[in-house]
Each structure stands twice: as structure tokens, then as C-alpha cells.
Length: 134
Image (tube, rainbow, N blue to C red):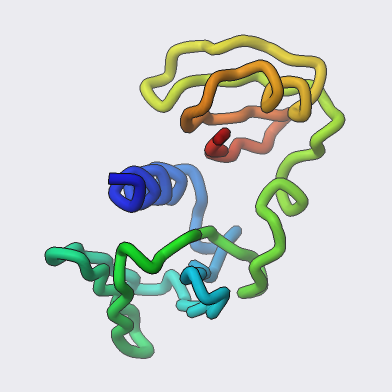
């Protein structure tokens, strides 16, 4: 269930990101191994416990139970998305995944400490990012 949720959140995030801004999708498994794929002509499908990811360069099959993270990347690295897009000390507006406002906070850090666990869309200036709070 957690992996399906992660998959859905990632797909939602892909709607907000354009291939020109984030040309790579990086998958990390429980062993810390990463798989980097270009988003050009990217398709993903789920069958049982497997995620099949295909692009112009080939196909990778990943086990959903072993998948810990999927994130878009500008350079193929696995640097924290928060460091890439949002400043943790600047004001943010927070929305649920269905678009309902969850509040405005003086900082991302305070939002993360205040909000209950869940997935949120965070807006900071012209930047928008999906964040999962645990």
C-alpha cells in the first residue's frame, strides 16, 4: 500500500514537472542502489509486485516492495528534492493532494512539524513540490 501511494504521489508530481526542468527520474531501492532514467518517452506500468519503467534507452523492472524513493532530478543525482526546489526556512502555502488548502506557514520546517503525516503539495513563490510528511 505504501508503495502504491508513493507511485501515485510521484505520478502527481510528474504533472507539475516538465521534462525540460527535470530530465531524469531516479529510483532508489532498500539497498541504496539507484536507477536513473531519462524521462524522454518514459512509460511506467505496474504488474503484481513489479514496476516496469521504459524509455527510449531501454526497460528496467523494479520490485515495488524494494522501492524506497522515486524523485525527479535535474542532473540524475539523488540530492534531496527539498534542497533542489524549496528553501526550508522560507514561507510556504500547503495544499492537500485534492487541492484543499491546509494552511500557510512561515517556513517549511514549521509546516513539517505542524501537519499530520500525509502527502501535500507545497508552494513557495513560483516553486511547487509534492512532499510526504511521516
